[in-house]
Length: 124
Image (cartoon, rainbow, N blue to C red; front, side, top):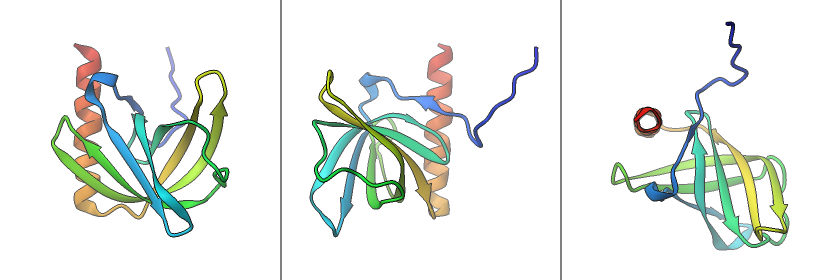
């Protein structure tokens, strides 16, 4: 069997029990956007936010993000860029995929360690 991976990095799903929280901030938006990380890789994250975000998110819009990784008792500060977003009316939530931009080496190590941890948890 041949498997071709289209992504640069493995994407690990974050179980709800591990409650990884994202807080986005931007000088153009008030207040903070608080959401939950659904999955994460070394190069990006998928986050859901309650309700509809107004004004709409823009592709390539940049935010400062604080990711609270409770399983590792770590906070990671990063800059992210919106790759896509969608409002789901049935669930009343906004979902967005984000690219991680210019991550510091120490924070990259924390993200890599967390993704590896999540991979191991999936196997158990």
